[in-house]
Image (tube, rainbow, N blue to C red; front, side, top):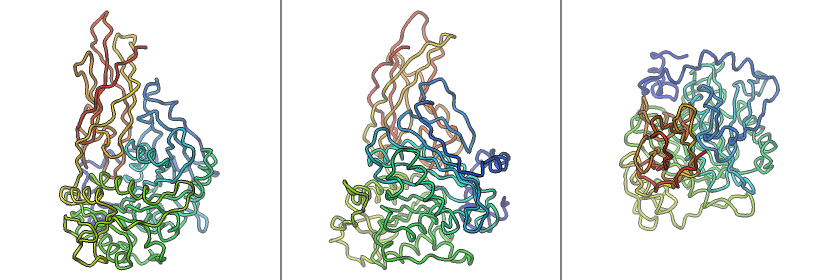
Length: 498
């Protein structure tokens, strides 16, 4: 593991930044001691298992289990999960890092139209945080809207190295060193396990942070015909031009047809993620690529509230590019585009833009332009709409006389989920989450929000125990959901007593 001195020498690379910016890094590395045993205990052949999330639904009796690497009890009973584990493959051309792929699928969809990949960055803390990405309720809501699978790979690196050190992250975030082939193999296996054979050939939406941005960027050069859109948070291939062992990929013309957004923190200025994002934007823009440019004014390497830009941007790209009847992709429609000058905070319709379009930040339409303008000014996007009300509220009297209240909730992919208020006979008796997080990297969410745009492990459960109900009285329990902006929903229907 790198030391703090080494992190300073990294000067803002993905491994160094978490250690420099997290108030308490210990919570991310508690599982390091058991990592070696976990890796060596993996079977030599592929281990694959299908997990029905309903079997560990929040209303059940199974408590949350697992640690930083998992397994995890889902926060919601909606959809189902699949999991694949591959051991490290030391042979020539093999992926030298063990990896676990977790996939979430919406319930009862006819076919999978695309796979949304949420790829973590380099280092042990990032890999651990990435283990929960497929369980993220807000990203699941985006996947559900478009009948997509949500895939969260977690590469079990052995240290925080960002080069070819044995066990280091460059062994996976350069997909030409084995992770490309393993990713394709995993999709094929997941297509069999899920019963959706089209997963093998479905197009991809790629979101990547830091090393995950490098991975996503290179994948767009290897498979441009399969990629709906790319969102690069503080990570591009160009940021590693000074790393001589990292061969810069050749960019085929088709890659310049992929809608892309580069996003980074202004606190990274003078560091590789910042410089690489600027260089990628400039080089792609010069080739006529539809590429956006979104500096975050209030963060450094942490993801902050970037999801409130990323999810609407990717949503619009999915609308623009997915075909109804096939897996081919439509070309980008530029007739409604808006443009902006880099590092400015105002966008206008393309026909009204006075500068050089080849040097302008591209935005797909007016709606995304308005979101972008708020984001680059404030570092977040606020919404005044109310979220959906919780559903299926249940109340069960426990042997000690307390009442266990549980429920489920549909999450709006734009609004997100900030938490819940539990009411007894119309009066508030509890709020989830009940404790403020140790470190805040964006608007606090029900599932937590890590440095890496992923939920906290353990995953929050939609359960509240009323420890002081009035005796010999059956109460009416209701639940209110809060959006990520704190806007309340209507109360749920009252609980059904069990």
